[in-house]
Image (cartoon, rainbow, N blue to C red; front, side, top):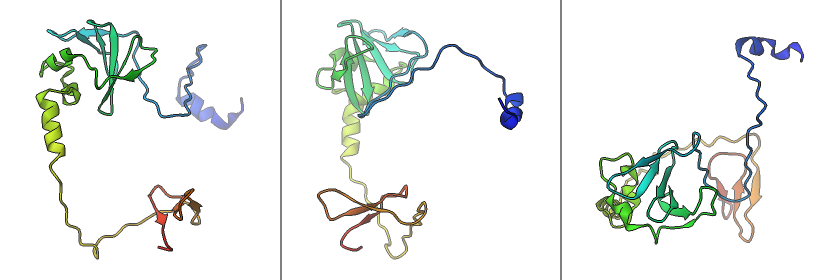
Length: 175
């Protein structure tokens, strides 16, 4: 080792580990379920689903069918084991999920359990249109580009997009 990082090494303790961390690679959209150790099951009386408490995910083991249930982006998935494979379960979610008490650690999922008052309220709330009035002459935006403008064609269209900005900027009919 050279002295380039001597001040950093002196300020931070050196942690030596023989275990190489897992690296997960996916070429398609995925949802990552992370547990802090082995699953810790928390009963939700009086229901059969048990909350897996040592994760930030909405993850359950349903003791009635011994399947795992996972809520992601408002959709339910199920699997026979945590390793998967996971399949859609929104249309086949066990009815006992409706019985999760409102004051339980798992009550946050009730809005996504079909047939609950929370899910019905969410559907009604989503159907109320929002209206905003904007004075277009007073509206401004400051788009930041990384370097010189870089346009790229969108295949099978006459539209181009700007590659080097975090904003959604498109060129359509020279505008």
